[in-house]
Length: 212
Ligand code: AMP
Image (cartoon, rainbow, N blue to C red):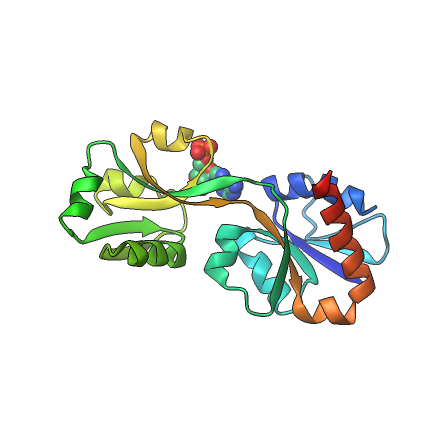
């Protein structure tokens, strides 16, 4: 059995065409079904529906052989026990620093002020500000990060930005582009050896679809 961990939403939708190129059709829609294990047209392949942040954990510990996860999630989780052979170029966005439009970020950085930064992406934010030599107090949040600068909880946020509409709607402006984000295929290191033929077939089909 080959088990693939996917999260609902954008990653799931954008992965379906790639799976199709590998001859795999998921037989149920996770938005309509409450099932967490979805069958495919191939009796030996199944899909697990997991939270986006749990995909690397399932694959690392062998609960799934393969998974698809954002680079952001992978950097936060770490890559132990995982092989990441492909950038799938899906669910593209960027991770940025944003502040209230009336906050003078450049001056705060120039003056060496200690910044309070709220984010779900603590590891990425810590690394980014350490490299820049900016002192920060990081505040971990799990969602609605845009609220933090508006309520005085933080001076800045580190969050994913796609169109920029969410920032704009909350009177926030992007002041640093930390990195581009897209989704990666991750593979359990042991599965790559023990289930080499079927796992390789999926990796190769994805690679071929990307090359088109
Ligand atoms: P936008 O308004 O298009 O800039 O989208 C920003 C909101 O969507 C933020 O709350 C982000 O956390 C979320 N978001 C944007 N792109 C992605 C992505 N590729 N994966 C997950 N969340 C995203």
